[in-house]
Picture (cartoon, rainbow, N blue to C red):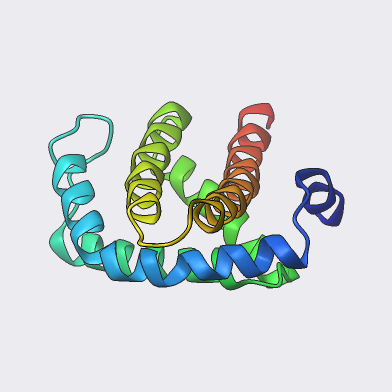
Length: 151
């Protein structure tokens, strides 16, 4: 995994800028996740989700984003991130819906960061770091999917 982090260019500066994105994510998370799961519930790509499951998913998503954006990328983080892909495949979520859903969520985060009253270069650094972290997270989840497809 360290090779993947290196390949993506995730260093201490990137980690610092990614951590600055976390408060933005936290501040919009309730609205963002409520809207997302409301739309998911109307989508035939997933089975109907009970309200208590949706609440658990929202809490886990927020916890995961915090770990992603403030993480030192320990072995625990990698295991949890890979587990997300495994869990999604176990509920038969087609990877295209996982990727589309993740993209949709990240675009709202991007919009919120870009709206911050900060200098453009600072917002750029935050988005640059955020995109690297998202690429890492998606790579781990999709890798879990692909290992299942090969099995």
